[in-house]
Length: 248
Image (tube, rainbow, N blue to C red):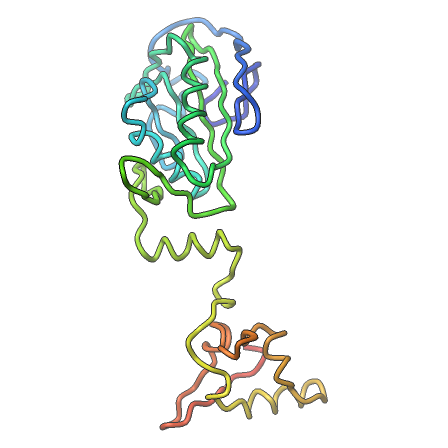
């Protein structure tokens, strides 16, 4: 079974919805490093979506939980416990404990709880635990601990605190809001829509009603324009005009 690929042998699975139960995977023989000519050959280094950990750090879990947080805020990823940062299999003495403690810490320290799955496999006579984290729908996922609340994102093979721009993007993703739907500070009544109304009448034969601006996503019910409408604003002297058409 290759790291990062779908399991081909029996594993145990532990998610936030079910307890961890170990079913040993099949052995493949041999010990030590991940062989370049073996099934792990393509995964001998940490990448944007893979982190290696020799063991599970319980006293300072932030060292690996920040990667769980970053994976959930991104496109997902995997942590492999029992492998050093050089890609050598070192194995775990008690994979059951590692899986249970990892699940416990994720649920306690990351808010909201991200989608994840734990698998224990045996490869080259070494037992390792794979923690697979899926891309979350409830962003931003926040690490809560040590008196702080931090949102992490993935940058290369590192997990770093999110910038203000990244935080806004994650908030939009979590609220399932598109950029064009964001409310601006501009009021619809402060703008002229002659060109837009004329274009709409020419195409449909109907007059553009005030309620249509909300239906078309150009304004909110409180009268404020959206980003979609602000893209077609043209300033002419002291008078602000909407000069675009619905086709833009």
